[in-house]
Image (tube, rainbow over all chains, first blue to last red; front, side, top):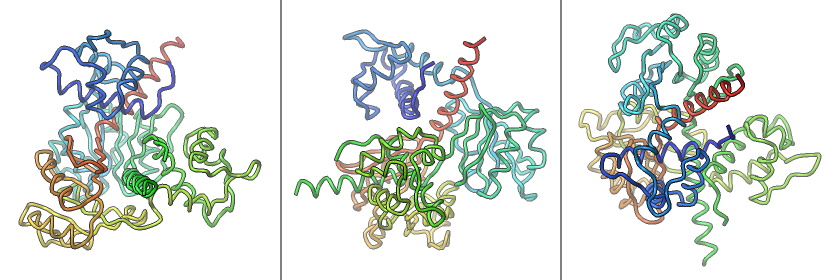
Length: 213
Length: 213
């Protein structure tokens, strides 16, 4: 399989989300319409989809249901995924209550915390487990994806334990680099980095205005 | 200014974060070293930086302090930014307590909620303001960036109010499309989309394994 850039994968996710909105309302969608709704160009849409052999028909566009199925297959969403959240502070419990996850195919089947007062508490329909039982619970519940929402100092150790327990992928919200063995898929979310995307746009658009003056 | 892709901006942010870690410890850094630490190739690093006229010196690399200053300038981080958080539920209060924001140049100067029990409460050193006072407080405190962490049904209206009150950019965490006038910079965070990046990688690497069998 060709190497696909992270931003191309993001666009595929976005197309899929848009297609799900129109599914049942229309049978066909043009690259132009997908482009308008996703902020890409229609050439970009066609290029992204052709990478995976989905070409649409000139003058007709893509079959919505077919394209949904294709994109779900590419993105690994033709099935549900079992997720654990480690650290149920504010961010962790916000994620536990985030219904969008389940709607998009992610079942949170375990939550862990180090705080004895939280262990056993019911959050989002789930009992919080003691972090000491992490390896056992991860194996018993066949967790595939771990989400780390611990303080930064705890995150690297949690990542190692998740890896050893057999998790295949980690989404890390702690502002710290975490390791993992070969073949492990790790993505670190950096909220300040998202804000820097905004300030870049604000700054470059102002530079643009100045250059027109 | 040339149009820079969102993923290139992300990489610049990442380089900057890495440079700040080594600042004071080393004067020079090679594209190879930046690449290793950021997961890019060294050719990609050189290309990204050359877009902005920063070329380094063959065999020596880049001056760390210079490159930090250049990247801060490009990303609009040569100054601090004034931020408001609208909606102090779990996610909003997690962000209020997220020290990394202030360390990276973002000052949260206002927080709003619709819930009378939260208004006046002190969170992260800040009094929560009544959503009814949004326009006045945004203007008085000269807020430039709004972060929306309300439930999805409230988000579009909040975005309109932030826009009218003069905010220049919005980071939206609600899983819903929000509007904004021309020139407004809007980025919607989609946590399920981040997970889909993981499942894509898991699925395509498994396909790869199968193809070797």
